[in-house]
Image (cartoon, rainbow over all chains, first blue to last red; front, top):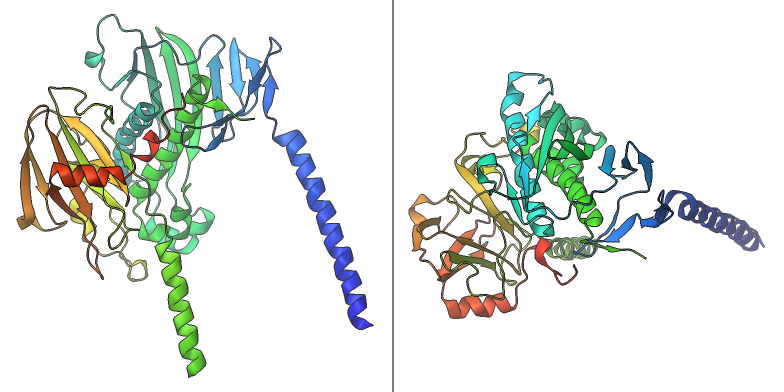
Amino acid sequence: MKIKKHLKTAAAFSSCAVILSLVGCATTDSTTNPTGSIGANGNRFPSKYIATDGRTIEIGSRSAADGGWNYRDPHLDKCWIASDFNFSGYDTLYIAPTLSTAKLHNPEEESPHQLAKENLPIELNQMLNARNIFANVVFREADIKPGDHVLKLENTITDYAKGGGAARYFVGLYGGGQPVLRVSGKMTDGGKTVFSFEVRRSGTSAGARMVGAFKSDVDIQTEDIRSMVLDLTDFMAAVAGKYQPAN
Amino acid sequence: MNRTWKFCLALCCASMVIFSGCVNGPTRQYPKFPDQTKRVADPSMARVYLIRPKKGLNQQVPVNFYGNDSAAIGPRVDPVRESRPVIPQLGLFAQNPRANSRWRMIGQVAAGSYLCWEEPPHVFALQGIQGKTNSLFSLNLTAGNVYYLCASTPGFWMPRSVIESISEEEGLALLKESKPPDDYRNRNQK
């Protein structure tokens, strides 16, 4: 008799849970995960793509702004692209030396900050080569071949903290002691801005949160740079037509 | 007692299963990955393969391959800090690499994968055993030739990466069962 009563209660609870979870799924599907957005010309623009390595990536819905499109990319803080621009048709991408307006907190940050400035173009080059978006990526103006159709990318570090192993040991899981890196970027074609973005990372990887005390600040910072570059180049590849839209 | 032993055995088995299942990190390279349909894409260059076989000890340990020649264009690496202990409980934290280190990453290779790049002819100096300066050897890279290196990570308590030069025959056999860097797999999709 008692068992029957418990069974009834359990059944009632589980059916409530199933209903609630189904309601949750329905809400997420219809509102926060649109598979595309309607552009000004009425064309549906896909927001999800299949990367060449099989990942499904999302670049978000877009809305018209300042003669271009603002994308609500979930991985980038800001993302704007000119309406007639899709990263294609250029021979060379020139990545200018990284600038920084970030205020350093102590002299110990100088060396890892310098490495962050140096590693950002290196990781960008690695992933752009892999995605085959530009035929050439160069770091010096002198390497640009005469007559090449060139895009220029300027990155500026606007916020920086190197983090600390001791803080990561105690509160790393909650973001304490994690390095901080915010980058603002601008891509120009002959002085005209065609793409701009802002992106921030702070101990993104699971390793940085779980065993961050065993990793150096620069190793975590490099993982953060790879994470931001991955999302940035995924966006470029999707817009450039290198990825197939997801169904 | 019997129960305790059974528990210990189960725990050992579980941890072995967990650790053997660990993904051994990504395979990525910084120099351009050349066209694999050609023996050497640029005849004025030498091609180098770094292959890490599927089988072997410490498969979960990533092998970082670095140098200071024209192929080493990745982030800076500081070999000195690799040997320093990291014990947060004793206040010994992982050291950051120096911003002026002359060593740079060529790539990272996981078990069952390979790296491939081309560089101008020169004498390519390599350290055979990680951390052992007396294990240096060199390859005389000449234009149009292909060189095969095999990476392994022997050692029970402290795995070290070991690099050795292998013949073309061995290299081709290993290549057949190895994968290219992660970013260059499934390249048939445009």
